[in-house]
Amino acid sequence: MKHTEFTKIHESLGAKMVPFAGFYMPIQYEGLNVEHEHVRSKVGVFDVSHMGEIYVKGPKALDLVQYITTNDASTLIDGKIQYSCFPNGKGGIVDDFLVYRMKEDFYLLVINAGNIDKDWAWVQEQNKKIGAEIENASGRISQLAVQGPLALKAMQKLTDTPIEDMEYYTHKTIKFAGIDGILFSITGYTGSGGCEIYFYNENAEHIWNAVFEAGKEFDIKPIGLAARDTLRLEMGFCLYGNDIDETTHPLEAGLGWITKFVDHKDFIDKDLYLKIKEEGLSRKLVAFEMIDRGIPRQHYSIVDAEGNEIGKVTSGTQGPSVKKAIGMGYVKTGFTKVGTEIFIQVRDKKIKANVVKLPFYKKS
Image (cartoon, rainbow, N blue to C red; front, side, top):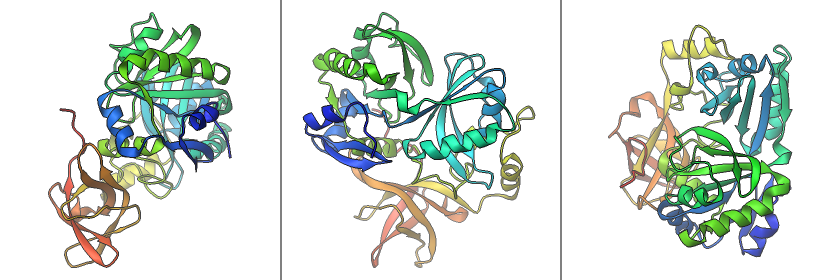
């Protein structure tokens, strides 16, 4: 079991610690609903140091990034970020991740914790034919996600660089809490605004203390990974291992927008995805809200009015902000239209639900 630099701090704050993606992580402190709503209304801090970081550098850097990812990284300029995924050569997805363009010939890939070893092996294997400079920096870097409507106001106290007006999916390297070379980005996985702060492990305790001191007047709190999951689901963001995996492809997962079939870009599975696009989808990831009482859970069957299986739930919860049971799942294409009535099989009962448009949570 791996530990982040903050394990002792989490334990001292009374966090409930559990194994997660090979790491010993805080799942909650005060309770899921309280923590979820705190991020929606104020500011909360997630330890996301378990995430992985891969550097791609040198004159072949863009060639490698273009070949192994679905999105078009050639459109990035310094300071911009892109959401993308690795196709697995069989139509599935190795992982979804973020591409940061640090400068020309220098990219940072931020990958999922549970996939670090798999992703690194995949990138190494594909790089044999490209020859970029690559480095797995995952073990050296810590990360805090400071999320909520007051997050940037609180963090501005720790830097002279303007950060409150930063655009979504951008980054800067700044002096933060007295330390030079801190990577500061605006991507967010909660739908409530905020930032991510990347730093070397040796600065972890200093950054943590500075962040919480700066946020004290805004009622800053540490938040566990359980609330991170409910926050992201209310926004309809995919979670690897639930909504996408080695058996799903980007087009059926609603990720056609990060799959760029442009002439100047060749990438793994491009021809296969083009064929799927031309032939049409057999299933699609949809969002649904429960009409009848009941909580949808991963792997529950989705059925039609006659009880015929038409798909499976991939994510489901009682949404603390939307005050209703919500979920996502793959269904046959005849059942994907917004407003379509579907049913979730909960033990021996069919529980009625409606296909809806994302996100579930809309800021007032």
